[in-house]
Image 1 (cartoon, rainbow, N blue to C red):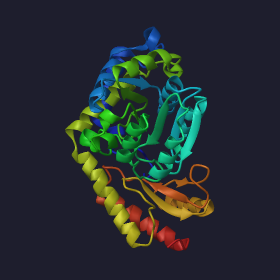
Image 2: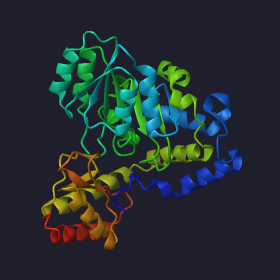
Image 3: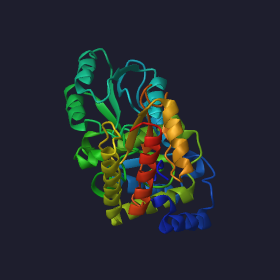
Image 4: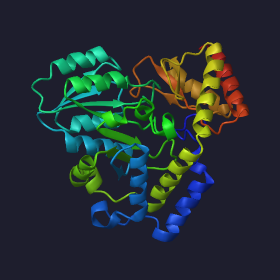
Amino acid sequence: MFSSNNYLGLASHPRIKQAATNAIKDYGLGAGASRLVAGSLEPLRQLESNLARLKSAEAALVFGSGYLANIGALTALMGPGDMIFSDELNHASLIDGCRLTKAELRIYRHCDIEHLKDLLDDSSSARRRLIVTDSIFSMDGDFAPLHQIVKLARRFDASIMLDEAHAVGVIGPNGAGLAAKLGLQNQIAIQMGTLSKALGAYGAYIAGSTVLIEFLINRARSFIYTTGLPPPIAAAATAAIEIMRAEPMRIQRLWDNAAYMRRNLEAAGFNFLRTESPILPLLIGEAADALAMTRRLLERGVYAIAIRPPTVPAGTARLRITPISEHTRADLDEAIAAIIQCGSELRLI
């Protein structure tokens, strides 16, 4: 498996399975109600406390998924008269959330600070300004230029919403994310992340000030009008955070495995675009070739899914290869050999 977001291999960790099993015994399977009715059970409160600590925030709020967290926060916080500045390669959930706010939406070229500055220069009529970006971009693997974004936010009196879905568990102290790695967590008003990738569970959260979280509890419709996260999922996510803190070598193994794959495949002639992370976007070009590569790899026992338009721009179809911390060197070598063989057969290298 080389297409999973289970970066630290925690989805099948015995402690996580045991935490979920224990919670089922104590609380049953489902929360039984929305959070504001009867669904705020103890495992969810414990998880939110742990997430706030991980993100060095005053408070955190758990949502049912990353999509729900992004659309819920954005539509609660922004509206007509406001301006949102969004990176052109932001995740679809951010894009949809921005559109649903009815605020004026301005798209800046990917990680282009000068373009963002020009758009902010022309925002004097805005009631409020919000810069929205992923921290690690899920299809390209590169980092948002957070230092420069923070400087612009200060200059133009803008807030920042940062989606750390692919950064938590991958980078930063205790796996806290890119903002923590750069020492910028206290400069980010709205920190979003998921429980379904490196943490191996399901769901998502917003972390920030107590005022922000109290506001979202009362205004975020995707939080208010849906059943609370199942208690065993919340308990599993808490266990994952504890393991991530206790076993930092998992993150190091993830980076080592990604570097090994990249080094060997680049030597064979493959291109990984501008990635700076363990996400390895192996550029193919045409969608048909990417699909053919996926099929041939699967015949050889390697699962590496083709990513094609509209998820990525035309002409940039790719295999999104994601080694995980628990892959052995033998696993990596098998995948590398298969990718090189299939790429040669298709005349991609």
